[in-house]
Image (cartoon, rainbow, N blue to C red):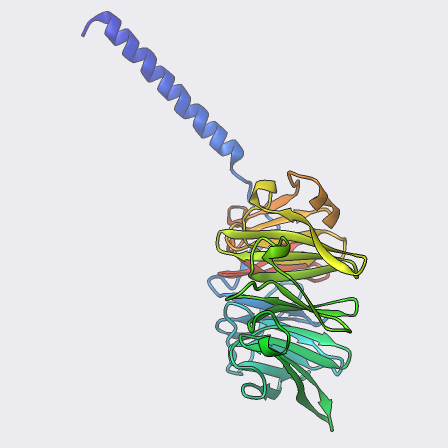
Length: 344
């Protein structure tokens, strides 16, 4: 090999070495920093539902129902009830103080002493997993894999007084989420065989919002009312979906905005929506973490500018299923673990 060839090889080697060093520097600079305010608790356990009762946090998991310290997230007690919460589930409180838990086998209600005082399941309510709960004036709505049921107190006992299915107005039998928007009830469907979307029960009947109206996917994961005339909707499955804004004009709902990964949302499927006490909007995804916006108004501008939190920052897992806010921290319920985010 002559001197010229050796010189060329040396120059190429030097360029490749420099390029490698530069790449490492760029990679290090672009790698997201770990957020020291994030702490992973209950690693490996699927957290499907969270509820803050003001004194403690209830956590519904695939391995049972836990009571946590609302400041630290430490486990205070694991309830003995045979309750498993996988995929979708919810915990809420009714006006009489009972804590209601929707799970794989139906509905359970607990008193202040953590005693299970009610267990309601099929055929009293539509069969299958209870996906969502909504406490209303004196009653409770439960959305299941095969319809929705309303419960109220009659003669001193909680009983089912209404059942809704596709035959009685729902777009689909699977009810994934229920929300109250003004005087309307919104039922979001999942595993849709037809158009899916949202079924809206008004005082005069039913109206619907689905893919024909502009919602990007027929599976509805979250409904967040901002007012009686404005609602944020999260939809999708796996790598499809997005976020939508519905606005009511002249008595009719219309999809006015759609946002997805191209606009700055970390992932296509929007898993959950949460508005904190400061008005910040949390948008969670199926597999790409969370983006936090200063307010819902930020959705009007693209690309979205917000704080993105992922497993690389310290999140337990990139699928965030539920969020609650306590006095000192937030809790993120993840597919594999609970994450505590300190406010300080």
